[in-house]
Length: 510
Image (cartoon, rainbow, N blue to C red):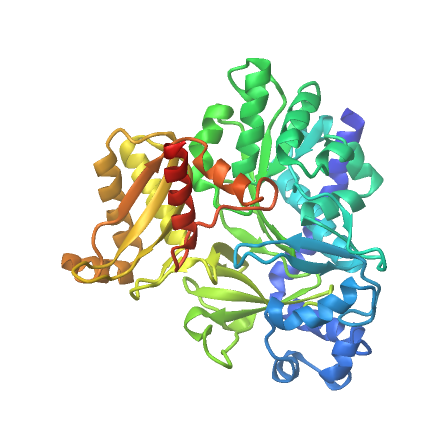
């Protein structure tokens, strides 16, 4: 295996030069990319409808093509699902990433072209390894295997009349991985692509214990479920007793800060490394390129053209959009993409904040529909994560999951925020946790602070400290266990909070 490790290390490092190139010439790379995308799709039905043949640059592209949400783009996608081709992209599309997302409850089917697989998702995976080996040249990662904790949705045929197949994006990627990548991953595909999550966790745990796992990739919440089960089966105290050469956890989809202490308990070693990525159903967008700095390098040569909508423009009929050359550090922007799978000026539902403009680095700040702004407080997920982290630090607590929603004005009472929080280690002082949460939110969000001033509009948060397993049972009840499914952190309505509280009350009666 040492020869394989040496070979892969050499291959991965060769990519660093190309990454440095787009870091040096970001605007030129993006301008050339949009011209190429438009040219390749000019004879598609979408390209003909919006006059791609005569579009010469990004300015004309933005003037010609409107902004699309999933609902607006769905009539085109529906035809692709039923087997029609040359609708959004010029090459045949038979793969679709199924995602419930967190913007609404409806399943979304995101087209995944061959180009999107090879030049975006696979390229992102290789770049992630290239960057890691560049930062850690003595890595022995390829002396063992990678444990991939993917989605819980197996590959399915859309209907009997089409040649279209769908699954979680992780399942689609695993199904199409090149042979060399299959050799260095675990578990076997028939287990990795199982649809029943609880049975899958059990089989993953029992079949990977004997492997030499050097790296793990997955969503922190569901990875913790698997790792805890492995420790239960083996009776070991920590993961290095199971896998002595474990050196890296690759994570994404949710903020890592609330789960950092849990991983430090599972793997209590300072030489354990962590790498964040931004890989969504719609594309692979960012990779943490600096050791111990949780910012994501925006990957600019993956067949994705980026635009950004200032948050205060989002609800306007014709919102202003910015190119890379116009963004500023510290502002929240909704992400708008055009891709080599035929997503044109597509609003994916995420918000990002730039931390650097040379090179372009970002942090994911939340979702366009996952925030609380019932009273003008504009609390986003990034604010909530930071406040939860501070409250945990102040009370020696370790978070497992949480969600929050507004309590609206009623006769004789002011508004507030209602939190449901589940812990691995509960706070040593619950009142202190609530006050610390409130104070931290006031420190990171001036709008929230203004509404909390002398309880003028908002009173102290109401926090429910719920038993372990509450969120797992709620997600199970909703059919949302595992993989790409995430607990919605914030909501501007009370649907999720009331569902959970109702479930808790019903269990008390039983």
